Length: 319
Image 1: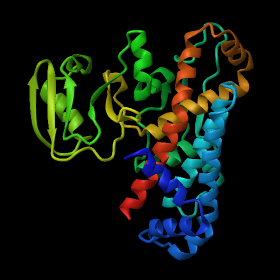
Image 2: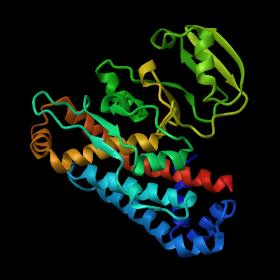
Image 3: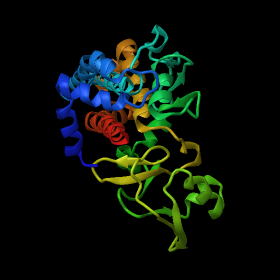
């Protein structure tokens, strides 16, 4: 899906009338829902969630790096809430779903590094609520997770990590192609035989027509191209290539939207409450953390806008 297709959808949804039409189509098959009434009631909130979310993202691209995480995080939160309104016409059903749903661990001032920091998922709150109702999965495949793992899943970070000889994820083919190709050395890092590896990835792929190993690569021919790319596969927006985790430890079935939620939550908390660490990091630029965070923040605006737009486009297509 091209960026201009996503932008045209956002433009279409900039009026109350078109927002109401969009929501009415989303609601028509929901049980015990008056689609006409609820779409009328929610159209303004839906439109403003999208509008405010996009403004936060745009302004985040303009401000000093010290403020970017906060604007980007709340931009993403607004956009997620817009998506939730398409599935949950009575959102928010209670105040329990309004909390962030994530906690950051107490930081140790000595030898602290962002990439080794971690966040913990709470039982209640927006993260689990969105994870459940946007992606139809009850709970994430982890209770806590490190920033290093999350960053390694993002395709646009792969070149950065390559400079330090770290292979976090690898390109396995172009979006829209009828096949994907894995290097055979992955079998060692995944501790799997060829047959077991194929079985592991097959549940996340369209129907497999054929497999063949040659030139240190495993070629998998598909019945149809991958239309909805989600964890453990991720899309590099500029290259339109599909990336896959290079390590078994990073093999996670989590949508990239929620990866950014966790990263931006933690960064926004650091920028607000870890004043000394954040101030020194930005001012001195003496740690690797600065380069990683700075690069990551260049990815956010376009990627988050695209991912949310793609989700909304697919939501409309289902109807």
